[in-house]
Image (cartoon, rainbow, N blue to C red; front, side):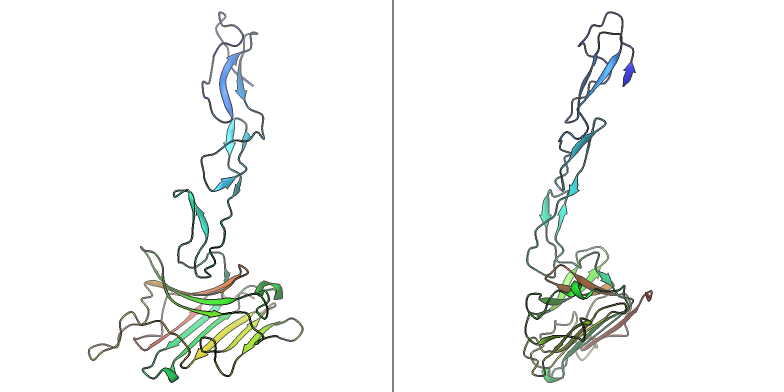
Length: 277
């Protein structure tokens, strides 16, 4: 590539044109035939784009192009978002909703926290999202744990994990029909008060979790009820998010921006998004 005409007195190897020295180019030099030639390294040569979160950077036309995104290891917590932060030059694991989950067309959540624990309950529904393959839910009967993570998501500060419900793999899970999903049934409610979970996969997926009574460990309300006020259970300012997360990396989310009831004893919200058919 010809960049400029050198002065007649310049000889081969003398500096001319662009004097940049980077991972992908050296200062331009005279070719001895009256032209100034660039000194770029060959396309595909390795380089460093100075972004901690890319790997396999290569030169192209004298510039360093970032390679593939760095994949950060799972920290083992289902309720954290594991990703690479270029500014921090590190893998980070903040407690916050995961992005890029299967999104609900319709979602519902109900939390009831009575002074009598035998009347406590939690219900979560995820309905009418995009199709979910049977393989997406893993194998909760043998190797895939599931966890329901409940977040208050403020506009200008980090998300707050307000509650979590872990369901480890167990024989209580049974396949529905001919690989149409999984069903968990425990009349004794021995694990976290969970009585029923249904994971219906296919073209019209429908997920639900139902837990209740004494073994259910509910989060405390933001503002407990007292003689002056009914209190408030979650902030929802501006959003509350409930995600069912699998240890296999899959997740299903329903976000709520309005509520039907939000007191220190009961929270109820229904999300009506775009119903996907």
